[in-house]
Each structure stands twice: as C-alpha cells, then as structure tokens.
Image (cartoon, rainbow, N blue to C red; front, side, top):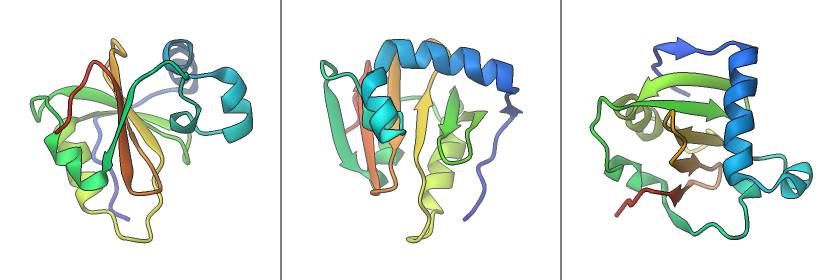
Length: 128
C-alpha cells in the first residue's frame, strides 16, 4: 500500500477531542458499540450517498483544500489535502483494505472510504 502524504499527525489528545465532536454530530453510539467502524455507525436520520471508490476524484473542493483523514484501522488522524487523498486512493492495490473518514475542521460533511471499495458521502457535500 502506498502511504498517505500528510502535513500533520495529531496527538492522542487532539484525536480524542476531534473524534468526540465528530461522533456527537454523525454517529449512533449504540451502533458504534456493535459495528466498531464510524462509517458503519451513521445516525439513522442522515442521508447518505453511496458511490464507487473511483468517484473520490470528483470531490467538489479545491485540490489544495486542507482536510482531516481518520484512518480507522490505524486509529490515526492526519491533516492532509484533497489532492493527497485522491492520490492515495487511486494508488490503492485491490488487496488494500482501508476504512477512513475524511472531513474538514468544521465537520460540515464527511466522506468515508470503506474496505468494500465504496465511498459514502453525508452532510453538506455533493459528489457526482
């Protein structure tokens, strides 16, 4: 697997604070206890768009937009850019399994990359 290019790797205290905000806004904590993955524990009332992973290149943001990527398998939070995430995803091998959530500092939207080679979009985002 090709590594993600990133500018910041957050401390455990920063990860905890940011993920707490994320979970409050988007995650059903009862589902999280059962399914363990954030993207698989969405609140029922959220509208989610499910797309093939190759649609990640259609993220409607400038390529240099700063975003956060939480790698659920490594339990690591990275500060990176849309361009670097797209490059990372496009270089995944078919055997690579990634479960990650991408969001901005305001957590107005989330794009989840799943090990099922899908992306899930929810919040204020429209990928075509």
